[in-house]
Length: 179
Image (cartoon, rainbow, N blue to C red; front, side):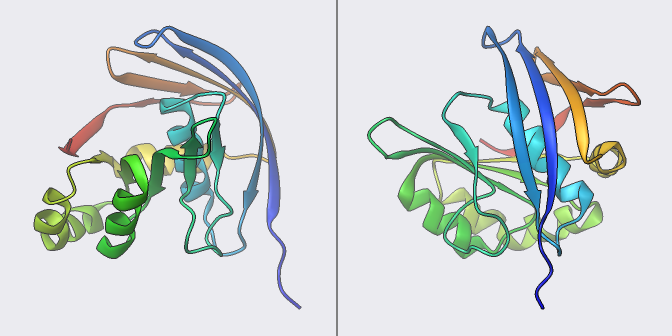
């Protein structure tokens, strides 16, 4: 019998002072059985960074042709394709051909620099790709923050992000590898 996804309910309040975007999003996030809390919370971080009424989570790890998150125009074109982790370069290339903008939130500690060295040249050819590195202490702290039911506030100002729950606060800055 296959294991089922774990459902997490979040109320994400976003105050993005850089874009003047202020909204509360009731989110239902399905965590695939093979997905860590850290990866799930990096997806939530991505949602907070790019919050929009049309941004939605993809079907997850079990679906190869969908990203972690994506934003489609009202006519169905993919405006933004967001991946998290260290995907195969072919995934990014395929996404680059399908979406106006592709964003990768790379996390995984030392593995990020190894992945970047192996994929830097191929990524440089993808002009609509932006790669942001999430520091290992940030992704780990986000993973520790995960709970089945959460109220999370995210504040963005001058490119800095702070995510907070009643129990913890995580401040995140990103290293731009490309874009």
